[in-house]
Image 1 (cartoon, rainbow, N blue to C red):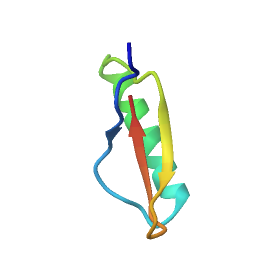
Image 2 (image 1 turned 90 degrees about the vertical axis):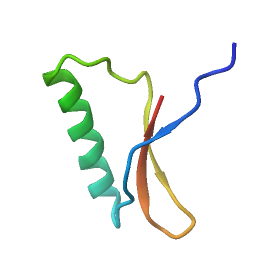
Image 3 (image 1 turned 180 degrees about the vertical axis):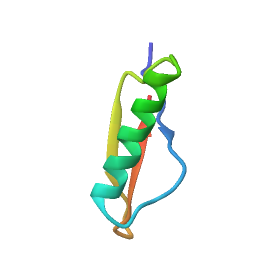
Image 4 (image 1 turned 60 degrees about the vertical axis):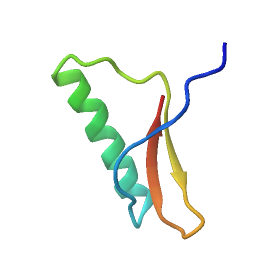
Length: 56
């Protein structure tokens, strides 16, 4: 069975810190509201130098 494909969190950020904060906000939101947490969360950098968050 192939691994699940990535889901890209809306928005790109100028700094890695901003992307990290978005990832922590998303993770905290899931814990507060009892939603299922993603099995893998990752920050990534685009070719233009922006940062984003993706999960599966």
